[in-house]
Length: 268
Image (tube, rainbow, N blue to C red; front, top):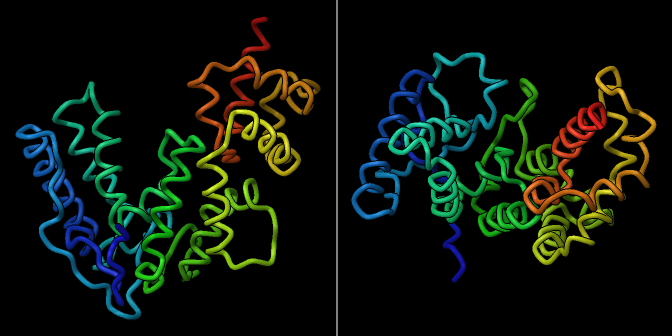
């Protein structure tokens, strides 16, 4: 069953207000979630949704939120709800994080938050689910006006998703010319059904785009970690958990894997 699309964008009321007020409200929401989780293992829906008025801006990243004393929509502060929820069972935070994501990825605001958050794990399978969730709520989310990582650069949904998740289109739907929404749809479908071999080939295709961003001053084995043949051999040695973390081909994850690999070569 497809989620109901609305002609407006609605966000939980605990995400609106000055920063300090939102911090208090999100922590309280996390405790409310924790209480219900302890009772029956589920999470409650927000008590109140409010419509984002035309012209209002939704802050999706803290890096551009310099006037935190002013009331605003601060989507990025969903993380405060999750941190408060984790307090109920710190040793089980991974399960709680997965539960929160699967529950609220079925809302417009949750779908967008998790697509933008870059939260691990970012396997091809998980990334596909996140992109597909945004696509289901695309019409509603198009009513938003967003700030991401560049101050005073107000973005449409297409611009926001391209800035935050364009790497997924490049890796999994490099064919240009189609609308952004269609390319994300194709990319997510390919990621959802990708085999390990598919992921390996996608990583190798993207290496020429990703490796120039590496900090060479922190690398001791440039001749190895910059070589695509060596990468193919290295990928074959990774266990399932290590490979899953880079299978979506997110550039930051690939670079992180490269730095780990370089350090491993130091002790071989």
